[in-house]
Length: 122
Image (cartoon, rainbow, N blue to C red; front, side):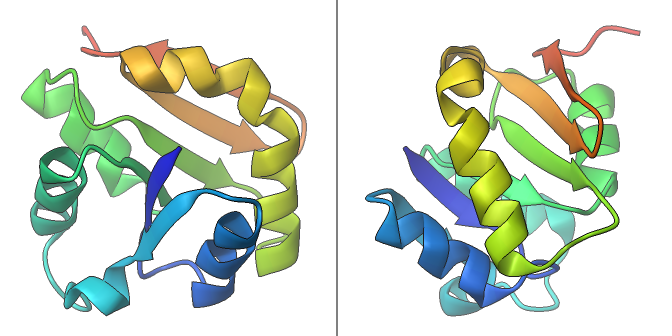
């Protein structure tokens, strides 16, 4: 898969995903450090990447814009060590891949994975 890892997550998350064979860019290497969330989403759409973040603003942006892309993976976990986040994502990717391909907001917590298909309707 093609991922864009947001700046709020360690560059090591991107490295772990790359090591697993995925096409991954980190927001900082795309000159997006400190840029608005909309700019990050725009790049994810333009490059057809799944956005990986821990910033809940992306879920709000998806809901308010009523869009079908980009898919967003949102980590809502207390343990944000890069190797843990990458491991959890990779371990569950086969279960959520079809949803991400068709457009979804995927929220990963310690207990479960929630999937909302895009567009998000009120």
